[in-house]
Amino acid sequence: MSTEAAAERPTRLDRRKERTRAALISAACEFLAHGRTAVSIQQITDAADVGFGSFYNHFDSKEALFEAAVESVLDVYVAFRDEVVAGYEDPAEVFAVSFRMTGRLQRQIPEMVRVLLNEGTRVLTRDKGLAPRAMHDIEAAISAGRFDIESARLGLMAAGGALLGLLQLLDAEPDLDAGEVADLMTARVLQGFGMSKEDADDLCSRDLPAQPDLSQF
Amino acid sequence: MSTEAAAERPTRLDRRKERTRAALISAACEFLAHGRTAVSIQQITDAADVGFGSFYNHFDSKEALFEAAVESVLDVYVAFRDEVVAGYEDPAEVFAVSFRMTGRLQRQIPEMVRVLLNEGTRVLTRDKGLAPRAMHDIEAAISAGRFDIESARLGLMAAGGALLGLLQLLDAEPDLDAGEVADLMTARVLQGFGMSKEDADDLCSRDLPAQPDLSQF
DNA sequence: ATTATCTATAGATCTATAGATAATGC
DNA sequence: ATTATCTATAGATCTATAGATAATGC
Image (cartoon, rainbow over the protein chains, first blue to last red):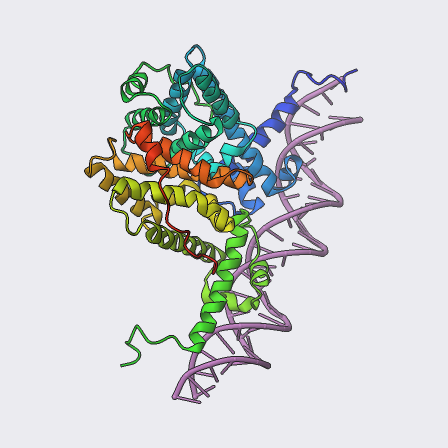
């Protein structure tokens, strides 16, 4: 029966509801990007151009909305990473490409990246999002003999932290060449993972895939 | 005249005032460590065991208190770092020692470290605190030919980010051997800065100074 | 006498909900 | 007929201050 069918085609009503939810999450991201969590629900619904009462159709509390906002950003980032590394075989190159492309992503959607920065190193211990992917990349590179490190987990925290540092730098210095800076840092991280300077620099000067279209965000 | 003398000996009244201020900052740190900034001033003064109205003798707003709390943690951290590296000549070793000791610090004052983690990579672009010191260490090591990297600033963001990642890991995994893990990560960062694996591992297995006494925090 | 603390409270703000309105489904 | 949105509001909470109390200085 229709009540059990989980995959009903979304109706127009569903789409309207989704639009309202998306507007709330988008507004929450804007506040989050500036670290402004001490805003009232009224301010959020005003920013989202949504009636105040509608908030409670979607979220129980401000905290629930902010959590959903972070998750939504992570979802976009994971989709970005998956698209970008598709087609690479060498796990070290998968790692390098996603690192290099993430730096470039900052110039494309700085607001979204700021939400990640606001979340800080906590993103690295979440069990969803980028941490499991990066962990998997690093483990694969160790198995393939490309990385020489004692612990994948430690490598994840080091590389993930360095990546956040890179994003913070790019955010603070709008005039820097994001690609150049990202490539340099990626090479140094690879060197820390046991690659020679030559191999690391070489891997970080190869052609990159096209930037995915993220204009809908 | 006495009103111009900036360095009057602190009177008992001054000390009482300082105690109240310290109690407020300490309570703010506890909330900050758990990311709970959405607390009322009443909750803060209750936690500090201080009368509600006293808050306004010291701070104009909740935000001002939280900012002062972060600064006070950074002050302690800088003092810790300065004490720990005193007596080392080699700038690479200064860097290694402060990195290795900071990991161990997490087990000593986890609450305080959590305040730093909550601040995230923003600490790396503050013009006071650890960033200028670390930047100076890295520049000195580059000049001395110990580090081979293109940009000290980039090195700061990579190493600082990795350090935050280390602290996050230690916070999330209480059973890890903090010294062991910190030494491993420090060595990998040094490798990324151009040192050979052997030199890096060697530098990270040397004796360390005694942990400074931080029991007053 | 001076200064900081405390308690009490007025007014502002914020949350959660009730009930009305508008949009969509059938 | 159903569902989501909107507006309005009661009650809760929070902030900032006034005035009383306690501690210290001289």
